Structures are given as structure tokens and as C-alpha cells.
Image (cartoon, rainbow, N blue to C red):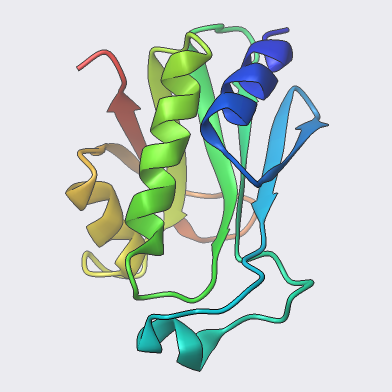
Length: 147
């Protein structure tokens, strides 16, 4: 229902990204093409046709105040791109009029890169549960965008 708001917000925030409608939300991808000056990036330079970063944001059915972040991909890892990407997702969600951004992560330990990223970016862990379909322990995180 609010997909158009997400599309407009994403296009205003994401310069040079591909923003597409996707099942009640948006799919955003970005490929870096061109010279890389940082040596850390040089070692992990992706192929020109491979997305460098990507994510999806989807309105939570039944609640127009919540948007779900999912299918996030970052390459290379470990050089700060995840933090940058979290900030972009928050800006898009806020600009589109959402109040809460939610996401999940499979629980391997309390020190996984994703858990550290959620903590660093001010997300709160609300719940941990066992997924009956996969058997994985999953944590539910959220960020109040009004604060």
C-alpha cells in the first residue's frame, strides 16, 4: 500500500542505485564500477556485474507504521559497509513515513557480525525464538526511527 512512498524515499536517498518495486516493498541494489582507492576494497573488488550491496524493505502487512528489512547483502564484508547500509535503510524508512524498522537474524552467538552491527546502530533485541520450519534460533530486532 505504501510501496510508492518507499520508492520515492529510496530514489531520493540512493544516488546511483537500482530501485525496483518488489512484493509490497522495494528491492535496492548497487554495483560499484570504477577505480577503487582504498586498499581494503582493492582486495575484495566484486565483478562489475555483481551487486556490491543490496537489500529489500517491505511494509509489514496489517501495520502501515512498520517496515521490514530483509535479504541484505554486502560485499566486501568487514570494511564498514554494513553500518553505512543500515543508515541508508533507516533514512529511507523514515522518509517514507515509517516509525519502526524490524529485522531478524539467525542466532549463532552473541558476537556475530550482524549482532554487533545491530548493537552498533542502536537496534534493540526484542525476542528470540526457535523457527519451527528450519529449527534455527532466530532473534527479532527493531529500531524506533522516531528517536
